[in-house]
Length: 166
Image 1 (cartoon, one colour):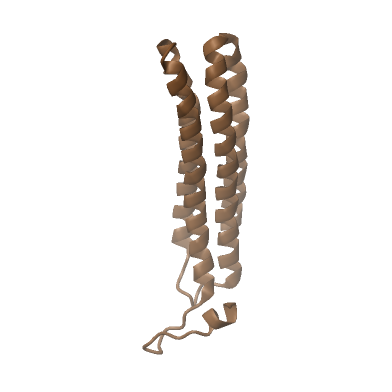
Image 2 (cartoon, helix red, strand yellow):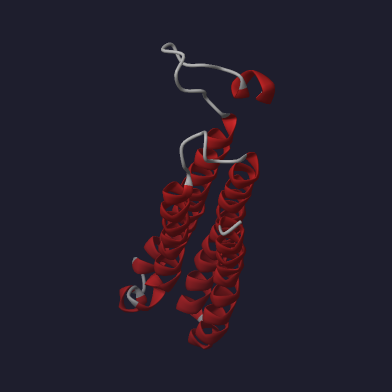
């Protein structure tokens, strides 16, 4: 498949088409789409918990928005990586397969880490805000767990930025 893509020529026979750019742009896509998937799930799941407790304890809704904000940060991580990668993808003649594969790995690293973090933030946020509504002493533990869940995405972002430099 790579051989077929690598040897294609445009209709005007002046510009060759390389699959290396395809892999670079797939890295851009994966970083943004997968990070937003994690952010969306985290927001949805934690938001459901907030809506449930808001009916009988509306005074703690603002304090309970922390998981939603942390889930939204995951989308920002994906956007940062996608913008950085999209600026590095060059024309097919200047862009090597090594760069394409490194940028795809970079996007997948950030995106998959953000999915994992989004799932953790969503589930912990949902259960945590419901528990916090019943017992206020759970709040500090909830915040610590959310910080460690967010750290998963931060680790992915750091490794992704390192990979994008290759």
